[in-house]
Amino acid sequence: MFALRRISGAAAASTRTPAAKRSLSSLHPTLYTSSTTSTGSRAKGKATNPENNLELIMGMPKEMGGSKGPAGGESNPEQLFGAAYSTCFLSALGATHGTLFPKHKPLPKSTAVRALVSIGKDKTEKLPIRQGFLLGVELEVLKKPLQEVGLEDADIQKLVRQAHQLCPYSRAVNGNIEVVVRVVDA
Image 1 (cartoon, one colour):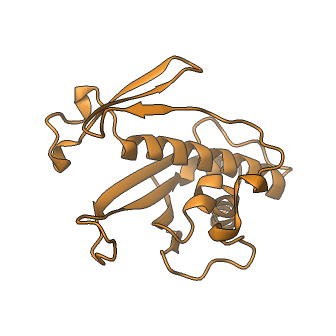
Image 2: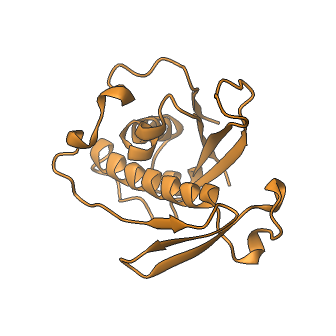
């Protein structure tokens, strides 16, 4: 099994721009901007986006004191971040695959990335407020669809590593949260 682990505080790759030096002016040209508004609270709020009439009811997971589980129809920030990150990473895989292996067939529709997003208390307690929380992410890239287009294990490792460098979400969280990327069988 291949695993790429980037830990908060670890030295960033030399090809990365430090987060402190990036800004909106680094986006040139800006290709798309989405506007989502959240109201209420994390526990009993709503997130809306007028572009596609998106309206999500927000709720706390049971593990954090909420009354409903995932089947309760409520969403939470960890689910939304996981959906966004895994989708973006999947796009980065496709773009990287086309560049690295132009003679292979395109990645099949069964290509999948699973994001496990965890939230927990900050054990370092370095924040000036009473309770600080941190996120952690595990990205699992399914191996079988990548093998179906003729990629060997070494090629898959290279593809995943370079997709991680390309993915805007990976770049945004670099050095801020722990991200573990794995290639898995199922």
